[in-house]
Length: 442
Image (tube, rainbow, N blue to C red; front, top):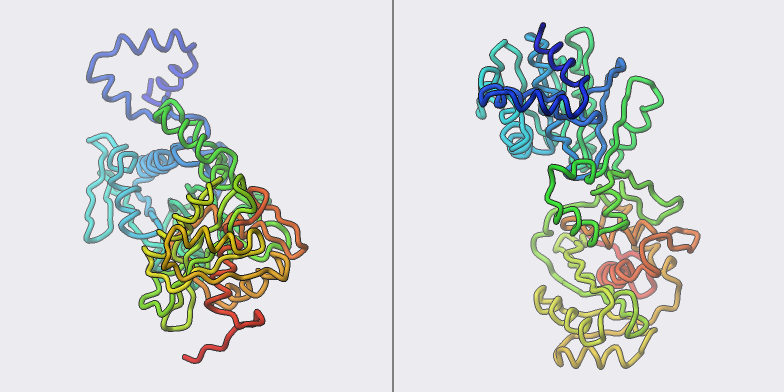
């Protein structure tokens, strides 16, 4: 009886009978057994039985996506001595640290007798039977122009760089090179984000050769610290970030939203270099028991581009607490101005801020338009590529993508406090007195 047939027979037994048999194994046999992935894997971590071309594992953090990818690569290499595999990560360091050398990476998942030789300088793994795998970076699409492959594993595809359409160019070059063997296949393991390439792949589900597997962090609860899951659920719950990062849900843009998630992904940039101005936008809570005080720091670069630097908003604060948070942000970033909406509280807003820091450079602004009307010219700056986010600001971006042109707010909370603070900050930096974009000459 072959090892595959023995494993199939073992899996067909009842759990009690299987446990009884496993307890009879000696230490050597038990060590060998740990490499029988089919015995330990959950069904959604195993390749689909259908004739698929793209297997998309779209799941929350901690689901076991990396282990599923590493085990699939081991299986491909073992079954296809002539396999030529592409391993594509967001960057080369990430591909090496996670896909190859990580605790759930390829080297850790292979038994000693079938462990590949890894040559970091050549970005290459060579298995004992001759199968090979090469590492590629999604930040360098042209490196996939030319090489041919039989199989590919793409990790954290939703993180691939979108600037200059690098993500889609990487995917296209990879797809055009999958022309070896009778059944070229691609596995994608990722936590979903609403970026153009993700939406394109999911739309391809209708073609029949794409299999999408979804999962939550809790699916792998037996291998995760219970405290981790409890803390993450308490902190993020059913927020947009929790639904995306824990539940593996692809969040679809609100119809008619001023900002889409794809637009925000295209607007991620570096730190902005030399900043000629820094302001702190503040949307004070309407009352002492308001939902949140929006506090957003933005800077104007010497090149005329705006850079969103930090979201330091505070939830359910007392007046003293949100005022201290504003003062601290202004001091930390050496801001030359604090722009605070005064519709709710008037002079009280300024007095609270002055109490926190007597030298705080405060300017009060009054909203004569609705939130959406104020936000529209700022959203136009994003469309024109004039604003960049230095990093990711999930709570702020959830609110931004919830502001629709119809005037309805469909984001988290009762009001887009963070987004409003952002609008005040960027209006101060980039817009004229009448809310029209300034002309910058480079």
